[in-house]
Amino acid sequence: MNKSADVIVIGSGIGGLTAAALLQERGISTLVFEKNRVPGGSCSSFQREGYCFDAGASVFYGFGENDKSGTLNLHTRIFRKLGIEVPTIHDPVQIHYHLPNGFTVPASYDRQKFLDALISRFPHEREGIGKFYRELDDVYDILSSLPAGSLEDIVHLATVGSTYPVKTMALALKTFRSMGKTARRYIHDEELLHFIDIEAYSWAVQDAIATPLVNAGICLADRHYGGINYPVGGSGAIPRALCKSIEQSGGRICYQSEVSSILVENGEARGVKLADGQEHYAKAVISNATVWDTFNRLINDSRYKVDESKFLRAPSWFQLYLGVDASVIPEGFYVHHILVDDWSNYNKPGGTIYFSAPTMLDPSLAPPGKHIVHAFVTSEVDLWEQHDKGNGEYRHAKEAFADSIIARTESILPGLSKAIELKILATPLTHQRYLNRFKGSYGPLLKPGQNILQKPQNTTRVKNLFAAGDSTFPGQGVIAVTYSGVSCASYIARQFGKPLDELK
Image (cartoon, rainbow, N blue to C red):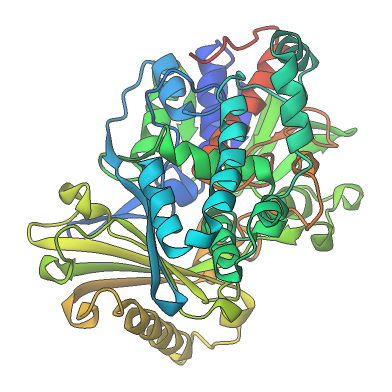
């Protein structure tokens, strides 16, 4: 068969683009098919009436410049390797939490400032706070020393294990530990344990008990080292830079080209079929789709079907993209916020409000005198499928739900409802349709008690079919899917006899 490329990538999410860019840099030809007009999936940008909105992701790790980076600071290392520059703006606070009983705390880049804020609220837990966050620092210290690579690559594992035997063993032991159970070894105050839960929920969409300690060490320690940095021009700057590298190295990206099926013959992936009937062949295929979309939709073979109950399913989102008069946002307002009204429903659909105002860092994203407010809450497709689109019921339901979120947000942004000049709403049905995600979900979550290494890896049961993105280890979030892309590229490159150089 005539090969269209060495490797075909389904979808231009960050995991798939990262893998494609690194493979193309090694001289392994890649061809990316993207359903939409722009790359990035949920880490893309879109424009309306002079505003540039982040489609989804808005908190970015991995752009730090410190030398101890290892498997962290991946964006800096990847773009340095690719010879591409992505300017960023440092954000002094990861998230400003607004919690029940008047408890507010900014998670500052300055580690001691953050810990002092917690201790001032919980002076009786001073020792426990110190011990718990040192546990996270210990994970960071290990990960910042180990080079990124595939956990399925025996050569990589042998090299890391022989070079860093003590740290490798320590990390292996920590993979069996839970963030929440670790916290409970040192902390007993229920309100503080609720805060530990929302620290986990803010990026893992699970409570601390269900969140692996290793994941927590990445997100809750690296914010004080590599820090949070916002790409100039919005989230879409990241996929655009990856695409630029792919194309400069001779790879191809085909937009408005939806993959309808993966061509499997005798248990081996041979290529893909597009919605327009075209077939393209390759030596390997990388799917950036969810595990359910890959094996239950793109592959029409019951032998590979994935039962939905095999994993917990990450929720989808209801999102508000607001263009507002700048006067509504006070000077010194932080960029990222989380609001919880009641601890009893923080992890229920709509219970926690996330929102960001990226124009506080990058004013070029909005017209002069305007700001962006991007607010979102968890939601499910089932809650929106019941509304009839034909008679306006669906639109009215969206507006009513958006109004309730805006009203709750006014507790920290008084007058927001009157300052709105542009409002765009997206439900889980939008995520399902636009991103081709099963029920609009952001991939599988670990069940309580499961080890992080039980997450799906890059290889699959179909020969030469690989996976990247939030359905694979280590999970959800831009830096996590970036790691999955590095891991996937590392494994495939070695199979092609062109192993990746260490990212430095």
